[in-house]
Length: 52
Image 1: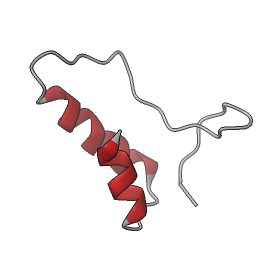
Image 2 (image 1 turned 180 degrees about the vertical axis):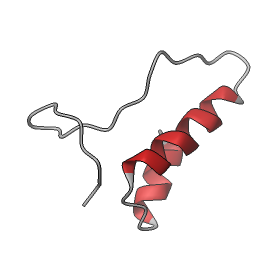
Image 3 (image 1 turned 180 degrees about the horizontal axis):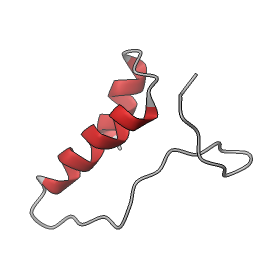
Image 4 (image 1 turned 60 degrees about the vertical axis):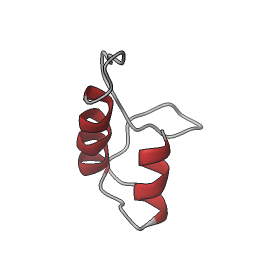
């Protein structure tokens, strides 16, 4: 999650790119496995395409 926080803090708003980088980072961890990664609106839980 720190990777995503850093990307957002440095102005990355495209969720697709953030997700790809986060999945790549997780895949490099020997004991980590994900089913999926998604960015959502905190209030509605609907997927979002950009972070503002």
